[in-house]
Amino acid sequence: MAFQNLLIKQSGTIQYIIINRENKLNALNNITIEELHNAIKHAFNDDSVGGVIITGAGQKAFVAGADIAEFEGKDIDEGREIARKGHKLVFDFIANGNKPVIAAINGYALGGGLELAMACHLRIAADNAKMGLPEVTLGLIPGYGGTQRLTQLAGRGKALELIMTADIITAQQALEFGLVNHVVESDKLLESTEELMQKILTRAPLALASVIRAVNSVGKHGFETEIDEFSRCFGTDDFKEGVTAFLQKRKPDFKGK
Image (cartoon, rainbow, N blue to C red; front, side):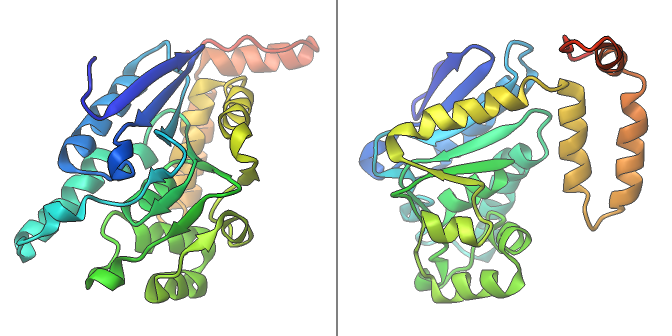
């Protein structure tokens, strides 16, 4: 599958999706949004892919935001469609995916870029990364899930502060606020991200998908969803293999069935 604004690389069962608009600081334009959807959908449906790492090309930016030039002249209905399309094709699509997705934040993650990182299930940031939601400086608010996911990660007070001030924060501050899981040296970012993904991929794939669904249901019948997902696992071959391996004191060989 050929893309104009993405690079796709495979490392074992890990697929890298690299946003490749370095001269535009990897900003998300319409073409990139559509290509991300197609790439992620393909990865979710490809049995050879266990998990996805999303990062940006170059050293300056993960994604510096949406391509604001495409917003010029748009009216209320068109603005609603921009946000709704982004949610459907990329942001909610990643968050509700059946495989783990980790953002490797290698520079600026601003606006839509930070929203993309927050839609991923985990985030690892280079120590020189900068993050923020500066939309109010444009007379906007975050429209790709930023108000919701930042609140879930950092809490209501900190989310309101960061969004209303439009402050750009460091990777270390993001770690302190709960916005990222780990901060590593920039030259070890992909290595560290891949190590975390490899660890995750030793676990049962169907159970990982159940974890994502259960955690995403927090606040929305979460306990019932957990019960449903827990019970569903009992019907999988991976559950039988996991229990057998535990009793035999060996490592399990999960097949995702």
